[in-house]
Amino acid sequence: MSSSHNSVIDAIEDSLSKPDLHPRAREVLERRLEQIRKREYNRSEFVKEIKPVKLYKTREVAALLNCSIRKVQYMVKLGSLKALRNQGLIRIPGEEIVRFLEKP
Image (tube, rainbow, N blue to C red):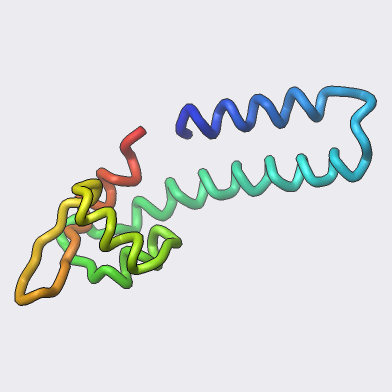
């Protein structure tokens, strides 16, 4: 889990430990904590499914990262994601996606 998620989890747990917390606020915080923990578990399982030798299309990477195609193209342009270009098409190696997901 990344350090930013750890600090968010710590803050939520601190809030939940307060006895005078409004019941609705407690419910919302508990739901958010569950979502964060579930997402981190799903991400670790998800990384195992990425094939390092496969070349992925931008739309496939967008679906994997749960973001827009434009965002993937922008990350490639910035160099956050290394990609191969062939006749105007962008292909992103699976090992690059894994590296991107595992960096802090």
